[in-house]
Structures are given as structure tokens and as C-alpha cells.
Length: 127
Image (cartoon, rainbow, N blue to C red; front, side):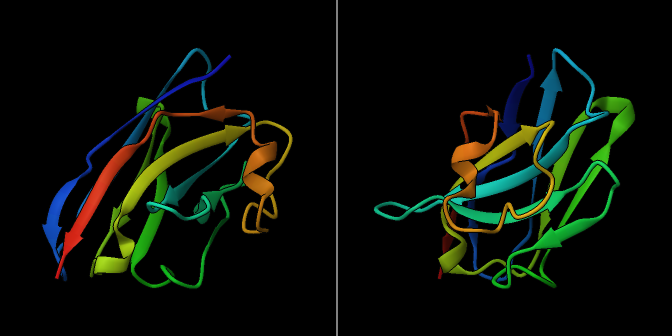
């Protein structure tokens, strides 16, 4: 079992930066792919970024070049550095982990297959 707890959300202005954290307990990240999804009101949960067990990363087109996903293995914590935030980035951000799936997290609906989730942290970007 893996427990995930997100933090770092808040209210910021367009153009600002935020860093989200996802602290894992129960097991280390080793052997798990990790990632971030977000869900805006009235919309489907969507992929943001993921880091595979190989440490390679991939991003949605909407955040590529602005967001960076990385892991601090010593702290068993996943991060999402978000720069140049836009109002359309407003959403609840969820951390996810899975030991079986490392690819295709960006396929619509794939999130249903992932095993572990945090409860989310709200990011609001004002214009």
C-alpha cells in the first residue's frame, strides 16, 4: 500500500509559480511510476505529467515547457514545479502512483487504471 498526500496548492496570479509536493508513505517510490493529474470543475480528470520508473518524464502539451516533474527519493516526495501559471491551470491537482503502468498516462481515461491517489490540492490562478 502507498499513501499519498499532496500539498502546496493555493491562490496565485497569472504568471506566478507554485511548487506542489506529494509525500508518499507506506513504500518507497522505487518500482513505481508517479505522476500528476488535475480536474477542473465540471471537467474530466486530465493528465499533467508523469515520471516513469526509469526516471524519464513526459508532459501534456498544455503544460510542456512550463511545468517540471521531479522526485526527491531521499524524502520519498514527488514534486511539480509550475511556472508561468495561467487561469486555465486552475484545478484540483492529484498525485498518482502505480507499479504496473508507466506509459500512456496521457491517454484519456487511463487514470482509471492507476492504483494509488492522493486527495488533491487546489490551485487557483487569477487573471
